[in-house]
Amino acid sequence: MTRPVTFRRRLQSFRKTMRTHGALVILLTFLAVVAGSSQFLKGSLLEGVTVSSQSGDASSVASLSPLRTCSATGTVFEKIWNFSVLERTFREQMTAVVKEREQLLSSPSSRSCLKDQEPEMPALRMMAKELPGWYVQEQYPVSDGTATRTTLRPVTWNTFSSIVTEFERVYECRLTEISDRALLVVSSNLDYDETGPDGRPTMFCCTEASGSGGGCVRKEEGTACSTTATANPQCDNQCSVGIDSFQIAMRLNPLVQRMDIERSHVRTALQRTLTTLRSFETNDAIARQLSCYERASVDLQNELSLLSDASSCLPRIWDVVTSLHDRKSPSN
Image (cartoon, rainbow, N blue to C red; front, side, top):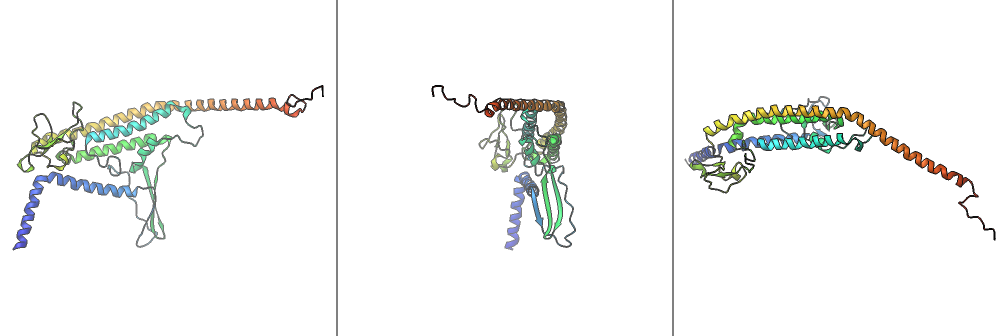
C-alpha cells in the first residue's frame, strides 16, 4: 500500500507544479529542444572534412539535408525570442555591413587595382559565416565510410546583395517563428520591449506568492511588488509568470500583428537600401578605373624621374677626367 500512496503523492505534487509553473516548464522544454537542434546544426557547419562510418555498400551515399531552411537555427537569432532584442540585433548587423559598403564606395583609391584581389570586408564575411544557407556540403564515399566536406561560399564584392538578402530572409523566418509560438512568448513576458515609451528599461517583479494568484508581472505605477524589481522577464525565477486568459487575449493578437508589420517594413527597407547602393556601385566601376589610371600615371612619372636622374649621372661616370675626381694642383 505504501508504493501506490507514494506514487499518488508524487503525481499530485507534479500536477500542482504544472498548475503553478506550467507555462515556464513548457517554455524551458521548448527552448531545450531548440538549443539541442541548434547545437547539432552548428556542429555540422564547421568548415572542413568529417568522416562518418557507414554500413553497407560504401559507394552509396545518403542525400544531404538542405541547409537553407526557414529557421533561425544556427544563426545569430537562434536564442532570441524578444522582439526588441531581435530588432536591435538585426539593425546592428545590417548597419555594420552597409556602413562598410559605403566606406568602400566612397574611397575607391583605397582599394587594390589588381584584378583578382578583393577588398577586405570583415563585417560582411562575419555575417555570411552565421548563415547556414551560405554553406555548401558535399558527400563522397571513402574507405572508412562517408566523408562530408563543408565549405563557405565565396564572400566577394559581387555577393553583397545575396548575403544581405539571405540575412533578411532568416530574420523574417524568426519573426514567423515568434508569430507561430506567440502563446509561449506571451506566457513568458517576452512580448514586452526592453525599454518603455519613456525610454526607461522595462522592469518586472513578483506581486505575491505564486499560490495566491500573483506572480511575475511588469512593474508599473501602483504595482505592489513583493520582490526587488529586475529586468528579467521571468523575475530571475523567483516566482512563476503571472498571467491569465484575459491578458493572453489582449496581448496575443498585437504581437502577431507586430510581426507582420515588421516583415513588410524590413523587406521594403532592404529593397530601397540595395537600390540606393546600386546607383553608387554603377559609378564605382568608372571611379575605380579613373583612380587606377591616376595611380599608374603617378608611378610612371616617378619611374621617369628616376630614369632621368640616373641618365644625368652616366656621363660623369663614363668620363674619368671630370669633377668627380680631384685633379692635381699645378704647383705639384
